[in-house]
Length: 416
Ligand SMILES: Nc1ncnc2c1ncn2[C@@H]1O[C@H](COP(=O)(O)OP(=O)(O)O)[C@@H](O)[C@H]1O
Ligand SMILES: N[C@@H](CC(=O)OP(=O)(O)O)C(=O)O
Image 1 (cartoon, helix red, strand yellow):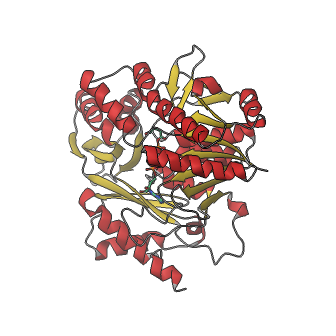
Image 2 (cartoon, protein in one colour; image 1 turned 180 degrees about the horizontal axis):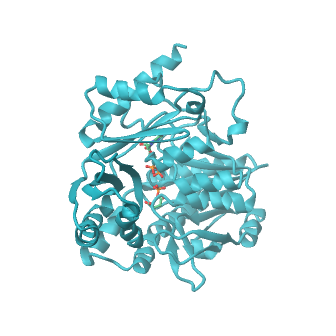
């Protein structure tokens, strides 16, 4: 007998028929004698629908009220799933985050889990119940409802699995595992049987939305066995593993494991900034103070020795606010500088632990992009990733060309 925490995302509970199918799947595990905790998200589209209503009423809704609102989506699906389970003879009870005792800090809309009470959950499981828990939500110490940030149900699932010492946390979604890149953009993408925590962390933080980054962090930190599977068909899915546990019989480590991309960033350049100590901090200080996260940063060599250019990226949603700050605070403070902005960019990243021991990945990437006539606007690298910023309109082309060039296309690997 095993204990599974199974998380079903929005598309998996997107209609009454799909909720029925989830109930049947859960029943199957229970019939085999396993204990099951189910975490569900809101029905697909629901969290966006609620957000749109809030925006229609208030252009800057209070975060506390947003969490009160958004948490309702998951309350619908937990009760419906519990009913569907009961209908087919499976004893089940639904619980909100607060009822389970998922305690968070008070950072509304991006709260962090601090502790989870497990006694009642364990008692329910021992009594033969399937426990259905609302994903994405918790409660702060004053009893306010909080949410964990978009995609946060994955984190609920992994955190519950860690707290309960579950045998596996299974993330059921609309794809049958983690792919070499998003199969919606590259039809030749293929499922990976396993991927390291480190690579998955990079892919998630660079835009692959199959798993929420904090869920992967949690799994790594607490050693939770984590698997991504399809809600709609049976199969082994993808196991997220510690690097040391990777299958030693596997073929030589691939150079690149996956390609991530995002259109969710915007680029800002300050031309003609003085090339003296302290300028970078005078540019980015006010931006940090406004709680805006900066991603890539590039400072050019000063051609004439006195002035340089400073370029950085922020999330698209922060573009306008950042531009305003630069115009109203930073440029007057620096006593000059010309601002250029572009929010039609995409970031495409190659990720792979194999990169550590191989030279030439960047030059190959640049050659492939050059052959497709794709202009590179910014580059950043770390030990296991290379990211480039390109024009948004070239994103699909770049992803597909790189996928082929690095030997990730389906036919290439199948014929090996
Ligand atoms: N590397 C990848 N592998 C698999 N899916 C990916 C990848 N990158 C992006 N995705 C996308 O992630 C989607 C699943 O995430 P999401 O829509 O958040 O599911 P859920 O609603 O189940 O939480 C897939 O439909 C796929 O388009
Ligand atoms: N409902 C939340 C939480 C979530 O995780 O959803 P999904 O599992 O469908 O990505 C959201 O839309 O962000």
